[in-house]
Image 1: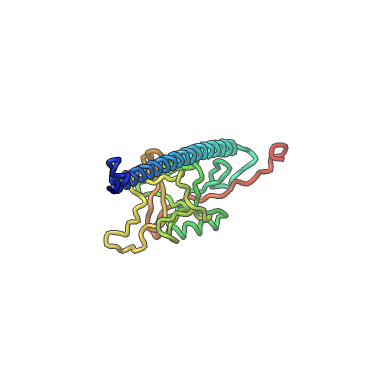
Image 2: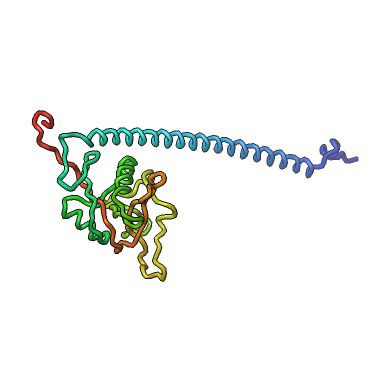
Length: 237
């Protein structure tokens, strides 16, 4: 009599053993994949945490530098070694001219350049605060706003100052929904609002008083240039 194969003697078919082996291999592969996924997830969390920590530290350092800059500028405000021409107002080592003439953004800039400066570039919250308070006193009505040196006329949505530097995202003082690039009631201004004016006669909430406007609209303006060192003997030497 022929003997049965060993697998039949043990009561298990070859196909059954093969299926169990496949299941064990599949479970093992899934476990390995899960472990690898967990490791990758843990590594990603560590990287995210490190990047977040570095960002917080960088922001803190920037805040400290800005605070230090503001203190230095404040110390320069009443420094007898620096002075401004007649008609200009000194603040933080800079001179500001608040124009009484209403003209377009480009014409206003030409006027500032003719005076040896340019439309104002706002470099700090402290400077924005100074200008916002000043404009409260000189504005005669709600629309009596002032041009500043910020525009996106070259590339829509890319706001740059007159010196070519991009707008710092941490130093933006837009009011409400601005900038909205409105094109006029009947689309008569296809280029939209590409220049920035500022001012809120009744005072601005959190200093937010920037508005985009048609560059051709006549407004007053704020010119800016560096204060010059005076000649007070034994003080400025």
